[in-house]
Length: 477
Image 1 (cartoon, rainbow, N blue to C red):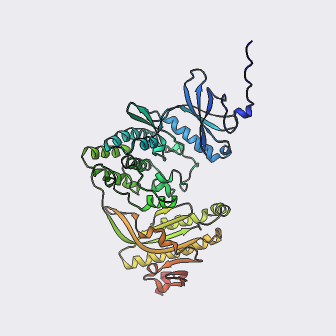
Image 2: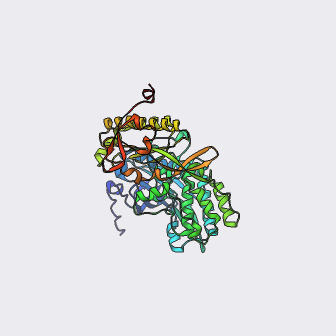
Image 3: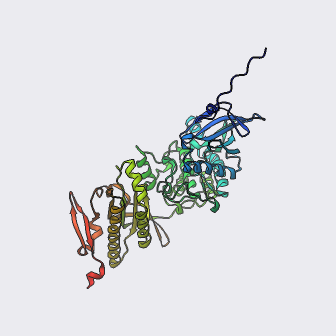
């Protein structure tokens, strides 16, 4: 007598937060959970007819109520739909469960991450790294060609597939990819949103600025550095320290850490430039210079740097603000941010540092004494307006300060781009926090002190709080 068939699990068990074996998603059957992440779960499955193995990525139930998370997931699906390249995971089907959770069915890849491969093999030679980089770079270039920026290229997001004694690679996890075509612009991430992995993020990602193909080139530079040296160039005790290194610190020369040609230092120096405009314009030119460096033909050297005196304007919410206050402040800050943007544009300032709660805008002091005085006056007057607007809208002890200091600039012809300097150091601004008014230093008052009403800041002999400033016209009467 034929034994009875096992009972079919209730529908809520098959399609709960974790899908059960036997759940059907379109033409595919779930076999079991392979990986559970905070954003999505990955299941092993198979095609119900051909039995071909697949990976099924499903958005977590807890996030299915968030349109932002659904947009992020669907963005990955749209990115992968565009891509057909042997170095990029293949998508078979897109769909949604009855409860609205989207899913992606992809090829099942048997292999370990490139991070695990490097841990097992140790650092690669320059020639080996070039071979891997050619494969990864080809995949990235193919993505860029159809308007997809990966934004999270790292060894953990590359699968190493065994191929004899060596391996080939596939690029995966386009979960935060940026679609650059006009028809794909949407609001899942704003220009003030920071996305990526802190240890492998480009400066513009840390600052919440727009990304482009050169953002991925920065990540490729980090990956190259890691492959030949066995470490990433920037590491620290916490996320803030790592981010500051990405923003301000020069990477240690890799030729001092690994037996590679010194010409590789120049390639990495350009790939890891803080300013996007100073990086390679595309993956192809990066790979060409890398090949020349490995084979003994060094690429052209980069332009020089100079140190100039600058002036900066800091606007910062208190770091200790609790979650409720931060959410309230975020909802009330639009007018303040709009005023800050107007000041930055009106005075021609650069914004080398911007985080979720802080903006630091800077300018080089002009050579003319009269123009210096005008810039100092305009910046302090703007700081007073911003402080008044922030106090009225936010009421959370916003820090507004104007200080002078050294700026390191990259000089290319008549253009001077800020890339570092003591004026960008957090320690310079730390002593301004907590003051009840606009804080300025003696350098900011130079040449205009008799027009500015100030009070010495207690415990800080070279800092002052500003009560008022006279317009230059009043002084001339």
